[in-house]
Amino acid sequence: MINLVWLKRDIRVSDHRPLYEAANNGKPTLILYVIEPDYWQLEDTSKRQFQFIKESLLSLSKQLQCIGASLTVRKGDVVEILEKVHLHAAISNLYCHQETGNPWTYERDKRVIAWCKSKQVNYQEYQQQAVFRGHVNRDKWHHVAEKWLQAAVFPTPTHIHTLLQHHNGLKLLDVYPADDNNEARTPQQGGLEAANKTRDSFFHHRINEYLYGISSPVKSTTSSSRLSPYLAYGVLSLRQVLQQAQALPVTSKRNKSGFLSRLYWHSHFVQKLESEPRYAEQAVHNSLIDMRANEFNESCYLRWSSGDTGVPFIDACMRMLIQTGWINFRMRAMLMAYSSYHLWLDWQKPAARLATLFVDYEPGIHYPQVQMQSGTTGINPFRIYNPVTQGLKYDPDGHFIRRYIPELDHVPDNYLHTPWLYAGLKDDLYAPPEKHPDDAAKIAREKISSFYKQHLDKGETGRVISTHASRKRATRRRNKSNTMSKNQLKLF
Image 1 (spheres, rainbow, N blue to C red):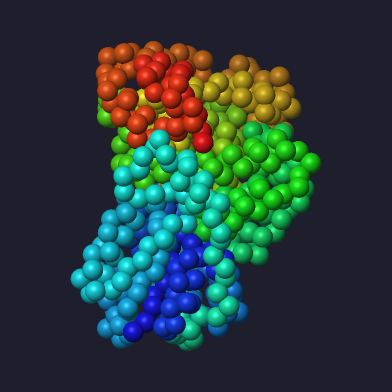
Image 2 (cartoon, rainbow, N blue to C red):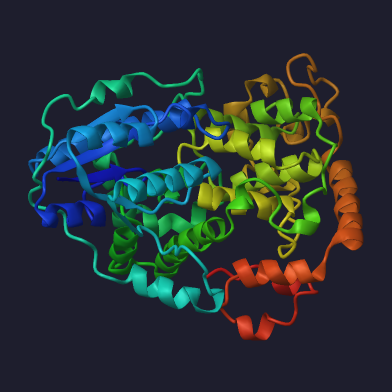
């Protein structure tokens, strides 16, 4: 009889309850990560994500060796692999962390649970975020979330009675199991050493510039924490990072508070997808499912997805994301909003494109954010960013645009944000946008306003608020669902 620890988005040994429980159980333990080819064929997965996971698993393997354990990697369908393991060494307990992923992983988890039940395997699933399964009372969520986040972290096991020391299968990580060349040229590196280095540099000095630079595509590369991929794949524990941040003696309490609030937002948004998994597939507000139906412009989508819309600040942000696998939150929101409003693209395909580009793709944050920026929640205001104004504000000298759009080298500075107005623009190098951004925004406002007036069901709006909105100061707001500005999300 053995223990099996099934790793998913929890590639670490610290504050890892499944490893902790297995170590204290006494039985031989198999620590398993499964490369699932069907998952890597999905439209929201990519090679750049796999590369980060690979680096993190290789780092984990070294950490496990230090406590006498071994990481085992296998490739295939996870239920079939569990069946093979069970035939050779009966699995008594299967320990894992709860995962809030895309619809595919949700269905996969249900199959694993069903298999465990059929084989009488004790299935133990634990939280690694302040996210709760089953019916969630949003009126009390922030209280139970705070209690979980402030609970003691689980210590790293000093020794694990490992089942396998050989045939670990790490070489399987050398081959990406899909036909995809979506690699970032300069991505963040995976693994605990890189994670600790990034965290320490932020905690020791970069945090003091946090709020000053997080909205700038250039400054945010250093002023942002850059911890998102390590949290997304569980290289670092969210709870542990939050508690470490709370203990920081920083010079600016405002910067520290700003960072902590964003760590709380993490679980707040993931809870949305956990509570309503269809967030990843269709508009969460039932009245808005067909708002952009049958109007998808493939040409506009292709120009947007490659950073060739003809609007320099939009394109520079997209090209930075393509090259590095990361861009700050504000620019992510602007990219999604531009596709949804200025180009009037239904959100699913742009959302999948962005997911493949993000090394730090976290479904529970990605899809709720996508729907907020697309105007399909029914409870958030329209976020129609003016890309020219945003560019002038965050790249006034044009250095960012010139870095990523060399086709505009010949354009004078005073035309750089609006090159379509420059008589000398070389259209064969950089084509102008199909619609002037101001005109496209005006059309979008008219479309969405008209659709809301005709189709928005206030009862459905109340359901979305009840299920997903934060309850901080909720007493004052509960009966004001008919006013969009008053229902703007107040984050926990």
